Every structure is written in C-alpha cells, then in structure tokens.
Length: 125
View 1 (cartoon, helix red, strand yellow):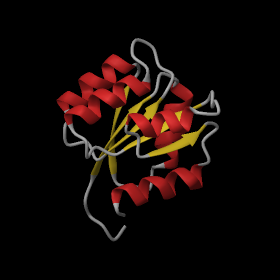
View 2 (tube, rainbow, N blue to C red; view 1 turned 120 degrees about the vertical axis):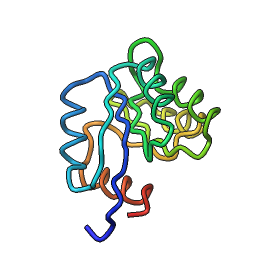
View 3 (cartoon, rainbow, N blue to C red; view 1 turned 180 degrees about the vertical axis):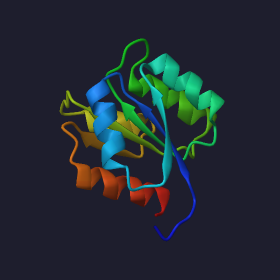
C-alpha cells in the first residue's frame, strides 16, 4: 500500500460473524481493530481511544443502540467518522443514522467491495 500510515478502526457489533466478516473485508487496509460487543463498551472504548480514525457502528446492539452511541460520540468529537450498519434495515433507518451524525450507512449482508470503497474514501486512502 502506498500509504504507510496505520489506521485505528473501532468495530461496534455484537455479532461475532459480522465482526469476522468486517475485519476480513478490511484486511488489506493497514489497521488495528478495536472490537466492542455492545453500545456501552463502544462508548468506553472510544473514550479510551479518542484517536480512532473510523467507527463501524451496528445500529442494533445491547445496552445502548448504535444511534445513541453515535450521538454521544459526535457530541464529544464531531469529526469522528462513523459508518452505520444494520441487518434490520427499515425505510427511515438511513435517514435516522445520518440525522444523529453517521457519515455513511450500509446494510447487512455487507457488500465487501462497497464497504472497502466506503472505508477507503473516509480514510482518504
């Protein structure tokens, strides 16, 4: 890769298979992955790693949902890049995600090519 910078990506998703797929799709991007299994953990890990370059945020998670976590993260750092992801896409989910501060939205099952394109664009790679 022409860019030697190593990125830090927080994946907030309670589904193990999704986490495996996401990290596999992004394996060619030089990144360290931080995994949160619920909304509260995502918030805690963000507070401990304020230098994350990107967050992949599942909308439906235990404890705090991804929309609430996004609101809180964006109130602390509005420049944090967040891609919302959901398996249970409803008509206005994308609109709600963008309204709370998500920078992009992708539905599950994740299209790997689309995800990689989205992530590279957000990272400026």
